[in-house]
Image (cartoon, rainbow, N blue to C red; front, side, top):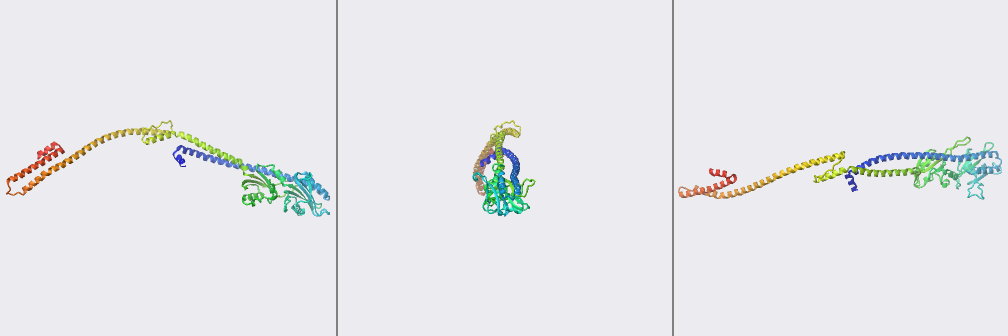
Length: 506
């Protein structure tokens, strides 16, 4: 990390390259982010449109099945009305309805108690069997009962008898024992007096509906679903859910994401739209709309409360988009690295004269004033800088010559002054020694003169003339010695002429 910091702080080409690449990266990332945002938006809109088409196709396909069952039941209904007094014919009509319509899993024709006076309950119920469950090759067999208890206690009979209107409902409502997942079309039978006397119940297998719907799979991992008003599954790829679960079962599991319930409530509210939710650690989108049947003259259209939905895993919607995003960002990163390398190479080459100039300046700073500064043909700032450095180096060389000449002159003057100083110092030393010597020489005569003068001062008139003469002569001799010494001193300090003048004066 320290080496990288040094490289960034000391290498101009790296810093310039990083600045260029950073600016380009900001612009590129902003462009990519904008492009990817709108691309994701377009993908979502296309998915929504495709989901709407899928939902519409699923609703139409299921509604066509329901319509064919309703129309087939209506045809049988008119035959039944014409033969209400012939109970044996009911088996024929029930069986024919199952045989003529591949979507019908079973048909039950029932009447109110004692409609036929010799029979309390009458039920003609034929059911289509699977190939594996068929006995003796009989695919359509007569059944004695359906579900638990008498049919008069079951919803598929009591509901239309109470309302007097045809309806679609789950025949197993209120039953404890599970039965095959079915959806039953219940059509009340009216007698000659306009009174409800019975019900035709036509079953459609939900497994069959699921298989038919799943044939038009919108994407590899998506599926369609159809819900009742209470959340029960009418269509679902997992047949176990048709029998044992509803849309809220998943929300009651431990750790279930709250978004599941939110999506389920939105579907059952009769709205149209889409919502994200998370289930089993996978993100999904559900596109939903209410189940609306086609209006046909003579068809009873009640609000069934069903809701159709398409469940998309997020990867099915945005999988390729996410892969494209990874590819785009990968290409962008590689492109930035290549741009960084290319920028570094170009800038490094362009800054070569500057590095050569920096090397020459370093050598000059170290004292190598004759270091040559390379020439350049560049006319930019670097070229002009090199030209200025060359002028500076020429001016520096001229100043060096002048300084050398001045230094030589100063050195000569210094040597002369040094010699003069040494001479003066030597003369001064000799003078001091001489003066000291002369002083010592004059001490003795001076003392003799003082003694003679003192003796003369103490003579009285009785002293001999000869003693006086001797003392005066001695004073004269000592004075001559002092004058001689003074003349020598003057000759030494001022020259012979000055000494002579002193002597003459004396």
